[in-house]
Amino acid sequence: MEYTRLGATGLEVSRLCLGCMNFGTDQPWMVHDREQARAVIDRALELGINVFDTANVYSQGESEEIVGAALADSDRDRSELVVATKVYGRMHEGPNGEGLSRKHVLEQADASLERLGTDYIDLYQIHRWDDETPIEETLSALDSLVDAGDVRYVGASTMPAWKFMKALSAADVDNHERFVSMQCEYNLVDRHEEANVLPLCAEQDIGVLPWSPLAGGFLTGKYERDEDPDSGRAATDEFMRKRFTDENWAVLEHVRDIADAHDATPAQVAIAWLLRKDTVDAPIVGPRTIDHLEDAVGALEIELSDREIERVEAPITPVWNPDIGDV
Image (cartoon, rainbow, N blue to C red; front, side, top):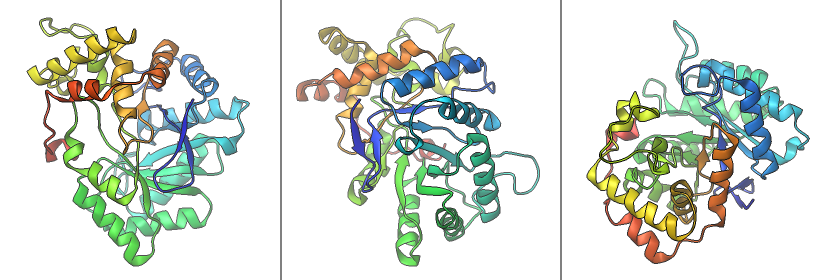
């Protein structure tokens, strides 16, 4: 495993992050068997992955429970691990059940700490922007968590660049904890963030943890241009099927050719492309099986040439889509 520093911090993170959204029972495609989920986490630890990303809203806390139990039972020193979770989504009906108010942030941090079975969260992230709460209130609540020792670093996820810059500026002006990382959708066919938040992250030295590095499975090559999908996420997910464009199929054809030349899989080429990006610290991979995990880690061995990079990027010109950015 390779390691790097997260953005401008001194925090050492593995070049791949284990995304744990798939662990739980909220959706049919999730890993419902906790022992299977723990086996994937155990193998990730063996392979040297030290960053584990979850969220309170993933299966309403079930993912956090699975991650916490697995890490507690491992033989890895807690000081080596980076436990990341998120806050924003609705956790109960009625008032104050979601958002980034001081009340919700502090209550959900306590709940996440309990489910994770840990004394502190290494990276606590706002899952989305909250238009109903002043960012200064949210930053103040995050300050309290850091001051109490409950949180080490704070990060953000999925928002337009102007909102993220507003948060960074507010932190600088009022001396709040500054967001050190950004989670954004970024892969070979979803490159809209190149025209949005990624240039800001580069300029501000913000760590980048891209989610959906395989475009929901599209970049694994399991779908075919002329076939109607009857299995996988695209069989039921309309958003996934929107990726079935001529430009995206062209990208996938190049990915497949390059994978054959490297004796690799399309997924490995897609992840290797992300790892070549200077702004990217650790793509978030979300395997449901050990085989998928090991395949993802194999991407670290692939060296793409500049010509290959140009080839897979050629079919798409990145354009910012605000409807995607606020998802």
